[in-house]
Structure formats: C-alpha cells, structure tokens
Amino acid sequence: MEKTVKLNIELGHILREWDPFAVGSGFYDTESADAIYAVHQLDDAEQLAARIKEIYEFSFDDKLSLECCRPIATRLLQVKHHSACDL
Image 1 (cartoon, rainbow, N blue to C red):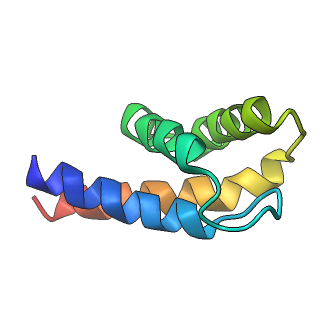
Image 2 (image 1 turned 180 degrees about the vertical axis):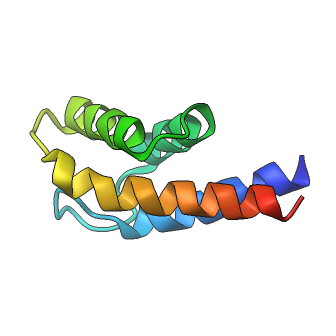
Image 3 (image 1 turned 60 degrees about the vertical axis):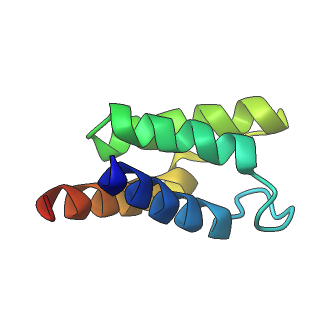
C-alpha cells in the first residue's frame, strides 16, 4: 500500500505541473485524480493519452490534441513502471 501511495503522490506532482489549458498549474485536482486512476488501469501510452484527453476535454469543454497528451502519458507510465521495478 505504501508504494501505491508514493506512486500516486509522484504522479500527482507531475500532473499538477502540466497545464494544458494555460489556466495555472494546480488548477486540475479532479482531472489529476481521474488521470491517476487511468494510469493504474492502462499500460499503453496511446490509450492513456486518449483517456487523459477525454478527461480534460470533458471538464473544460474544450479540445486538446492527442499530441499534447502523449508526452504526459508516456512520462506517467515511465514513473509507474519504474515504481513497479522497485518492488
């Protein structure tokens, strides 16, 4: 359980720094929580990017490009997989 909590904190930190709609970092608490859940459910960067895109678009009723979401999805999965290796 402790490893999962540490992973979630690290993922949350990464997501808080990401500001896809330029509204200010730290403004995306609900979306970050949903994205963290998606990281635990998915292992494919393309699928995760699409899910993150859906989450943020739904909340802000605005469009994001998949290209904007790919780097954050890749980074989140790298952190997830690195954490799994520490077990």
